[in-house]
Image (cartoon, rainbow, N blue to C red; front, top):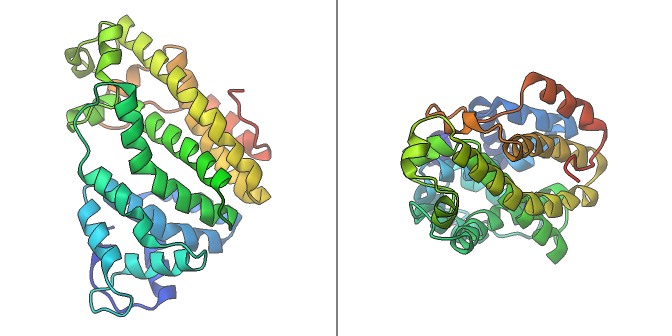
Length: 283
């Protein structure tokens, strides 16, 4: 993925293809986007690549890449591709700057839910807005609001499902006040197995995330049919993880290897069958 941040003189088509290739190489699951057409893959590739690179410890490098002048010598495949895709929607890549700053300056913990929510909005909101604009092929305040709810819920679910892994990397994605409320100590997370108190805490965190996912799910109704179904397929996987946490099945979230909590085979099959609908399974 870091090759996307190297100076390049590629044309737009070549830059987009390179972004897509690197994205598929790092995350093979993104090949599913091809079900809605190769054009969508190419459009989403640079934005998803920028997000992955930023979250992987390169927010400053991504920011520098986006600051390069359109005709400058230091253009990169990422900046070439992202600028081209967003300019078609009259969107500015520099809208990502606040998110990149938030990623670079992320604290190691959050005292309360208000702090966690504010950080998540600043970190995920700009990416969510641009992603929704590409998917819906338009922009509006309602679209942005739904995208922000959806982006925040996906972000929290991904962090909670690998809570132990992220804590060992230096960030706790549960408010400190919630740990105190359920009598959970940081040492409990390090044990790689869930106590009753920790499972109750995870169930509570899942209940807090659920309204965000339910509100954001309405975004699927604003998208073209196949894009809506693909988004719903992706969301159903996260809904399944959230449901497992709500029912106390969260032990795998404390594994140190980063694999975390994920749907079992039976649930995965139901998720695939759900491709024919965009209905939220947690309603």
